[in-house]
Image (tube, rainbow, N blue to C red):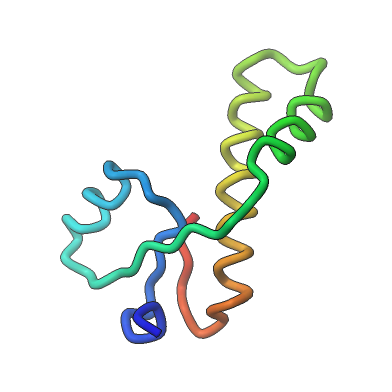
Length: 83
């Protein structure tokens, strides 16, 4: 696969993240797994409901990035995945 050839996978479709990584002039591939982001977000929001908004938001962003990266890594164990 293309991911195997580059060795580096960005688990995001964010144009800004792609731009920043591209500035490093290192070949990479973008891959975004199918993930029920709404369900994961709801679970994190419920788990951290007593926390201030900023804490809930940070936990949600980190959980989504980690879940995407883990799923991509599971299919590409020879690669480095950035989530």
